[in-house]
Amino acid sequence: MSVIQAPRGTFDVLPADMARRAVLEAHAERILGAAGYARIETPTFEATELFARGVGQATDIVQKEMYTFDDGGGRSLTLRPEGTAPVCRAYMEHGMHKLGQPVKLWYLSSFYRAEAPQRGRYRQFWQVGAEAIGSAGPDTDAELIVLLADLLLAMAVREVRLRLSSLGTPETRAEYRRELAEYLHAHEDGLSPEVVARIDLNPMRAFDAGDRTTRETMRGAPTLLDRLADEDAEHFARVRELLDGAGIGYELDPTLVRGLDYYARTVFEFTSDALGAQSGVGGGGRYDGLIEQLGGKPTPASGWAAGVERILLSASEQPIAPDVVDLFVAVAKPDADVAAFALANEARGAGMSAQMELAGRSLKGQLKHADRIRARYVAIIGDTMDVSLKDMESGAQTEVHSTAVIPTILRGSRLA
Ligand code: HAM
Image (cartoon, rainbow, N blue to C red; front, top):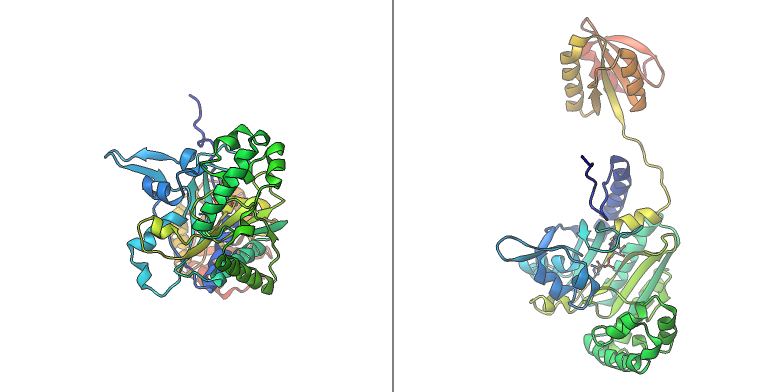
């Protein structure tokens, strides 16, 4: 019989990988918590319509990357491909507009996209994300950007660059899209067939194209940054001023295209040159129209998400403290296991980390194992009520009464 493997594009998070993820989680908790963000978790699947309406019909995500299924009762559900639309749904569903605004939320969750797997691109992946709902100010955008920069710095992500742009309002964008589509139609000969096919669906995607001819052609294309309405230009100038004040370096990139349709005004993306093809570490922006799009009242909002695997791939290795094992309980004869079991339990009850022999090893094998798991003490249970307590660091070994084992370790006194 063939052995079953994990589905393509998925991976196991093994105990050795878990430690680095825990470090990321702790940094996120600390950095976002200090800025008033509270953690949220939404369901793994949602009504398909949430993403169709939220992320946008014309996006790659909705067109070809969603894991959509029938729930058996004729309702279409989709494994969440991203977290912003679900968080907005939760904001509306729980009447969070009644809370003090903006409502600041963060998440660390798994997401699902049926993309072609490669290094840094998976079908199930994790994102850490932050959303500030209910504030239109440029300071909210700048704060969010600074927080992601802080997180990437804390994780020692290498060769980080920040690209920044503004998309203006939907009206400006619609007008600009018409202008851009006109330009693209007039230059169809210099564009790849794929780009030509999408001109009327989403002309902005032409800036995303990888082939040289299209890129050449796009160099002469009008840019949205030059077409911003006064209010949007001012908003963007203020975001830049705040970032400059915070000492955050960025490149203005009027061709910055995000793969989701809900953005308005500020958009940004952090990349790492250490990553290769899938260089996007994290990105986001302002999405003032999304909640209305989902049936709510007009509510300004802004946020970002960063890929956990991409952060870990681009981060410098940091030393991870090994797990501490205070006590390993060894048995010197077969029927000592009841006493060993009781002692290990008692030690854990007293707040220590304690393990006992579970594999039927010889005493020599048990001591070797205790050494491998870096146990600080080994208690060897034998015939009598006395226990041999061995200090694994000094090598010293003394006989103590079984009731004295835990107090001796808790005193932390080294055996000599
Ligand atoms: P996104 O740019 O689609 O934005 O994804 C954010 C990050 O998730 C990417 O920069 C990347 O690091 C990671 N990511 C995306 N797809 C994959 C994949 N297939 N495998 C591994 N990592 C991946 C969003 O999802 C928006 N919801 C961000 C946002 C929040 N905007 C406003 N608020």
